[in-house]
Image (tube, rainbow, N blue to C red):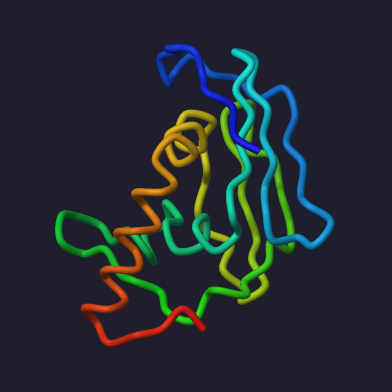
Length: 127
């Protein structure tokens, strides 16, 4: 479920609905500009904006392996600008701002392709 969004600056996006799929493997988001997206738990986990995944500087990003069957275990609002997602592996330190979620949704195919390439380069697997 992805609809083409209008040209909206990422800092101006606002979610109208955030829903966890029944299987807990996808986050469904509808934004106020009419765009609707479905993001996989795997993508959100491996691209978590946490320091554990992104590191503290350039070149420090890690590539979590074995996350193909990860589930979202919790969604917690953080102020009026983000959510904290908890995952079935215990990870819960990344704050996903509205703009970041929108950006990930727009680039999810490329983000997943990059992730798979990093896994292959590391000799690691998704499951």
